[in-house]
Length: 638
Image 1 (cartoon, rainbow, N blue to C red):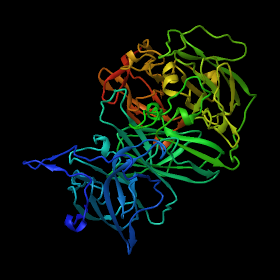
Image 2: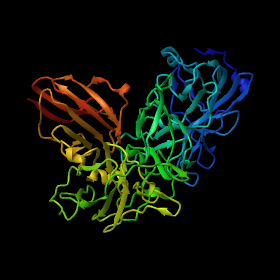
Image 3: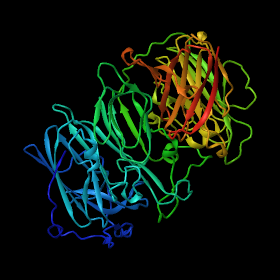
Image 4: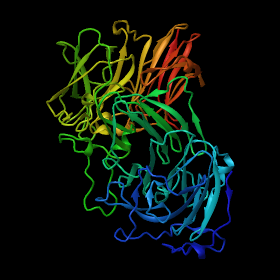
């Protein structure tokens, strides 16, 4: 536990408060006394890319002087309106969001002082030795208005951590008012001999005081203080080792998805500790769910050039939001009839990565190229506000079936067989298709106005137009295809489906190999439910005792990143074996029988094996994070 030093006299500090807090006769500080400067006079907050550590290091001692003040934050760029929030600075420098990076070598003593010039109480968490105990987390640094406090502790355990502030002593990370939400910063302890050539990304969320669901509520989701398209663009070469450390110091779950590649999850942690995953086997994913307060780090080696996205797959987080008050004009909303570019159709926690060089991949190719046609169509019972779209799949001269077109058709491909899929847009608006989890050339990745490289950039697919995607799937597994243009609206309308790559599609047995596609309902009246294979009331299915079944769970909902998939016998969980994640078979040492429950973020897939032992009644239950049942499918075991 860190040793707290005595308070530094406020008179010595000479702090000029931006607003005076008021103490009542019972000693309780009256909040909401924050004096918000005008946008014209407010100090402008700088976005922190977390490349340069703060403080002064000498003789294995880091000295860092933090100050919390109020400033104007512009996550949409300096040319757009901003909002007054509290933020940290270091050494008399500018305010930064996220706060100044504290980065030291293992064994360094950290001497940190925190000055409070916000005009309200300040409680700072995370300035203590790691791994931290519950008592460390429960004993934060309390800094009254106009004063300063200091703390000394040893950076004893390598890892990715963070520090954060709040007005109230009882405030949790996810319950801070909007003005406090940018009081966050990364704290990294490097292991001896480790490389510091990594990227550190801190996620934050801002929301004003309006209640959730208010159409005028202003929200921002940021990566290192910025919202797409202002976020930093990264550039690497084929063969580089890319290392990233992420900290979710926000109020929201972020399932982070990398287009076109798997990445290896190296560590997972939180404010108090970090767990290094065993290096004896890989932990390869294309989407990693990151709950509020969690951290993780990963390694990725790009093998193909192109422009690639790394973004939150909770679609609601990556749509353009309302502008901050005082904007000269509303931030452009998604237009359903333009030719489409992700610079206008996405926002929030999205990062663009360009990889240069020549591909080093050699994907085996077996057999003749297969030609498919995926047609995006208008379905029945839609409205302009709640459209109904769907896909039909064709090979050769097959004719389209009659609607409804839910769920999307399951595409079965053969491992290592080249395929050409022509997307035919018969909608009255542009669209695109992203082949989620598939390793392919960037140009075919389905991100309009971004995918590709140089002058060869993939277009949106306009009404009546087509686009041909070509790839050779290198591995068998469970994947997804879905629109990547006006995502929330078009996915809600029905534009998503399962994509299975198999060693032998002809041997596919749907009686024992079940697709469990979880999507969002088309109608807002059904918002308290989810669709399982296109319906809120799935028909009962049958199993036979002693036989082996594969259940392929796919979460492509637009706004429920905490759902739990369960297999229940009465009210009790059964046992199953998780065998694959995001289309990647798990290594033998990671296979294990477990309780039949998985929590899934958007964009994740899990494959499980289940063998019912006796006859009886089971059910698949899909619940929200709070346990409310969103869908249920009965199963009769004979």
